[in-house]
Length: 213
Image (cartoon, rainbow, N blue to C red; front, side):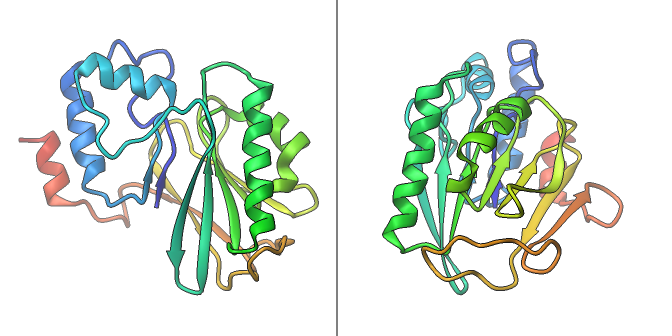
């Protein structure tokens, strides 16, 4: 599971949320078992304001970072995008170059980008460098997408919804061969879904107790 930015900092409010709120949120998220916990620049400000150590939360970075995970049937490569808070063509080029080099290694079944850049910047990046990735998981300002197929179905773009009231899921029934570039068949080779919180999603008593002591 990936937590990809802006979990702690609604846009423009990273200095206004009471430190106790950030502390509660961190305790709750730390119980959810995420494999990757990426902070946007705004999240880092919120942590600093609350006096919290980053712990297992990583970023923001000045350079792209590679994280790999073994999964059933193969291995995944995650490229964590650097984020200075500004449009930066140099670090965008580096993120694409890292993905391209990982593809050439031929060790990983999928190359997945994790972004905190916002929709406009991600769209521009996809237009220029999207061929380097199989999936991009985005977050930040802009609309949320349960799953958009881009570049003639060679890239799946998923974006977190800004209200934070749903979990986005991507299910890959069968991984492609390592080092290959997949052309997705929507809802066949990749199944995407948005599960709203509440309703059919059972609450967790331990997490509820954090917010309702």
